[in-house]
Image 1 (cartoon, rainbow, N blue to C red):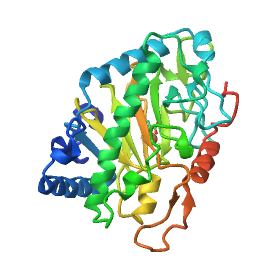
Image 2 (image 1 turned 30 degrees about the vertical axis):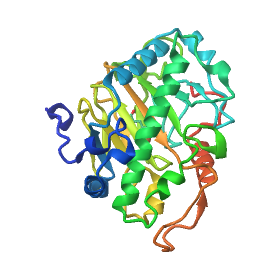
Image 3 (image 1 turned 180 degrees about the horizontal axis):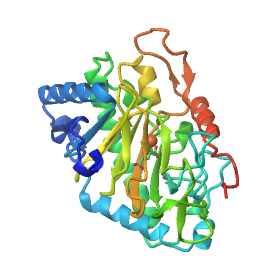
Image 4 (image 1 turned 120 degrees about the vertical axis):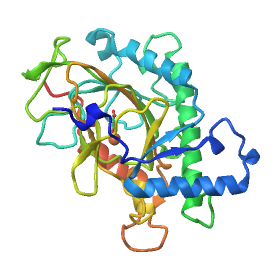
Length: 339
Ligand SMILES: O=C(O)CCC(=O)C(=O)O
Ligand SMILES: [Fe+2]
């Protein structure tokens, strides 16, 4: 039976074209009226489902392809090699490799069948950068590029929301590409390995052939913790987003676009005006690997997040406290992974 994934039906998620304010443009060369119109369009798009496809963002396709290539090169290495770069788990600010079976979003189910690499500029954990030519340099540069796009979107949302200080969100993310002020924004390279068809034994980490355990998935249902996430996905599919009725529908890849979703802090700031929507990655095509790259836009860790309309919908919370709590709840502080 043809599924929505196969039909490529993702028309329920809005597409916004930000050409007027793409990252190659200087802020002062953009006409104020065009910017205001764009801000309204962007805000409206984010208000519908909390997910949008952003097109004409200005990040060169070559740069995106190059990071996917470096990511492939890293994950294609033997497990023993990758294991040398396993990030220290006790420090959420560390960089490095996260093996399969580490992160979960439901403690009663098997951990996600994915492996990833967390990267930030200026990390004190420089020994965890792999020995792949240009890896650190290019990945760090991409982090900064993503941060630039993220800040543009934050500005547009601030304007679209009609904030008195339209730079409010931008200012709360000032340290996005540094480790200062406990900013936790990371670029995460993700690899969901191909698996055999049928249910299996969870034989991961031991051979190159993986099986899904009963109830295991590529990435469990969750919301993201920070302000927003930029997601670059390959053409495999599998990402699903929860609708207001509670069902999950595909966010099929659209070439040339970045999927952007609202995360928990933006929902709190806007007192539910913008929704941090639940999403997951299913093994839509088990035998085909999925590769994606997520840039998690986080406010500075010291920022205190409270509803901007002064409502009491959410109590004020320091972002780093919220982050640490979620980090612990997803099993990330364990030094071992599930066998
Ligand atoms: O890989 C994907 O498509 C989604 C990943 C995701 O939602 C996450 O890591 O938070
Ligand atoms: Fe996510």
